[in-house]
Amino acid sequence: MSKEAVFTMKLEPELRDAFMAEAEASHRPASQVVRELMREFIERQRQARESDAFLRTKVETARAQIASGQVASDAEVKARAALRTRTGGAGA
Image: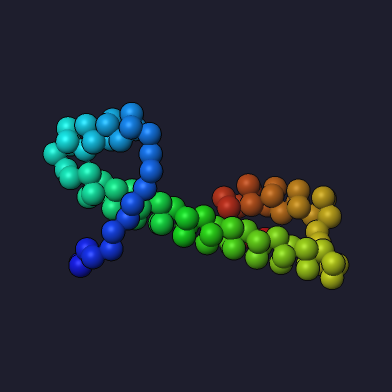
């Protein structure tokens, strides 16, 4: 992969020195470590967005079901749970 872009940043000298020392101790160039950190950050952010979207969809679905009256009473939920326990997880 071509590495033509330049990224400049300001940081505390102590942070830079500690980072450079750790990169050297791991026998890797600092730029490689920064690229790995960037990729990990990008992946975590993508996963967080996907998780948020999934949860938002689940909440919207539940709200729509409640609004349309598609709800189970407390007794029905407990009965289904008891049935699952008796049948080993299968069933209603």
